[in-house]
Image (cartoon, rainbow, N blue to C red; front, side, top):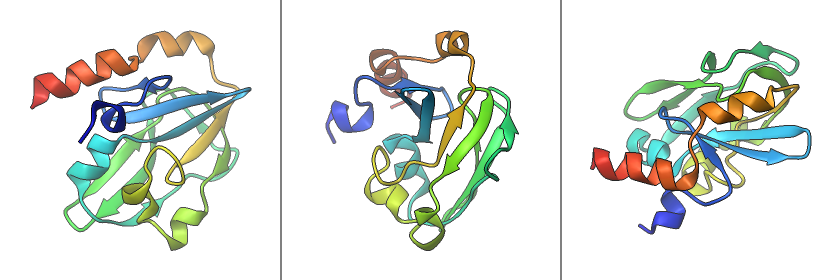
Length: 132
């Protein structure tokens, strides 16, 4: 697997393996390739309600796989602006395209300063390398 697939550039990452991509006033959030690979075949995603408020690193949603269920943490505090409802019928999108069609939520009203608590692709790649 290439490094770019593990941690594409231009995104922010958490140590808990969530990613963030800024799109204007929104922060798109998903699980990293490493996380989806560790979980195995994802069978269910419990998404938050739109307009729910989340705190940075607070529990945001739950992903279930054939191996386990895992909490997903909000990489930024804010308000859920949109959820990826396609995951309700196709949770496997997380396995197939974790950085694209498998995104989880879009947050609004987040604090830009909280981005300083996240890693860039190089730092996240280093974290993965140290863990292998």
